[in-house]
Image (cartoon, rainbow, N blue to C red):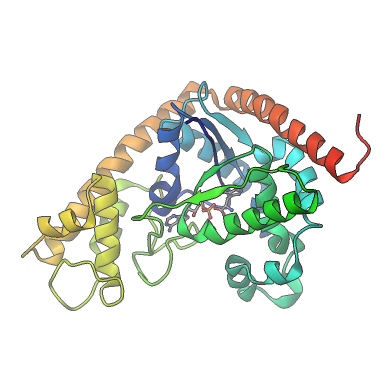
Amino acid sequence: MEQVVLSGIKPTGQLQLGNYIGALRNFAKYQDDNQVFVFIADLHALTLPIDPQVLYNNTRDIVAFYLACGLDPNKATIFLQSDVPAHSELGTILGNYAYMGEMNRMTQFKEKASKLNDKSIGLGLYTYPVLMAADILLYNAKTVPVGEDQKQHVELCRNLAERFNHRYKQDVFTIPTPVINKTGARIMSLSDPTKKMSKSDPKGDILLKDDLKAVRKKIMSAVTDLECEVRYDKENKPGISNLLTIYSCLKDITIEEAEKEFIGCNYGTFKKAVADVVCATLEELQAKYNQVIESGIIDEVLQKGAEKASKIANETVKRVKKVIGLYTK
Ligand code: AMP
Ligand code: TRP
């Protein structure tokens, strides 16, 4: 059955392998049989200070990678969050239905805020999950493919939608479900495999645009353990387990199958195989990315996407306004 599928990525840095495995590469597979909305969460990128030129460049880069990963603008709606003012409008409305207690429990906020001085924690960082709920509810999305770290935010969105529907005794919002891959939903840093790979971790991450030689070097020097057995054991062997996850995801095989391939192999041989598959994936992706950049179609894609997205988003806002008693024609 055709469903509305929606996801987004915030342009806070250069895309890394975790974004690709946990999110990006999963989007295109939905586009033939579903109504797919994929956007760049640029308003979300403002939650921490960011240089305007960097934000602009990152934004265009993500669009190019969306296309490089096979998203087809004739099938999926690809757009910028800030091009559709309905996101801000519904975000403002929904803020009144979210409770401080539940916002205080958001782990991503707590994590990010703990790294800042108390006096410089922006309000936007705190209210971020409410805007994310608006992103999802505007399009009546049922399926939200994301990495593990976004599960709590989608659950908050579900709670807000249910609370709202209950309050007004009608099904105003569709209740979304986060879709999280069993494997690869949390790719870890290569330099510290107990931490998530993130866009702001130059030593431990693999950027999609990285030079392939540098990628190979990072993988060959990834932190492992003192044993000599390629076995999945997240607790005791986080480094090897992470490399096995990366390998199996990119090869489209199970962890068990990957383990079997490396029985009796030393870590050097295993790492080389991981590097080979990562480099082959990135080489193809980078070639497609370059083609997209050269084709100059990004502006056109975004304009068309914003028009399509606005139509649906504006209808939702209108419906919501009516339900809550805001005067609307
Ligand atoms: P972000 O970089 O936080 O905007 O994340 C964009 C998407 O990539 C979200 O669906 C995240 O859950 C996913 N993602 C980010 N980092 C990782 C990671 N290390 N492993 C798997 N998925 C990730
Ligand atoms: N918060 C997500 C992230 O940091 C990005 C995002 C914003 C998103 N709005 C969304 C993802 C709606 C899925 C659906 O990765």
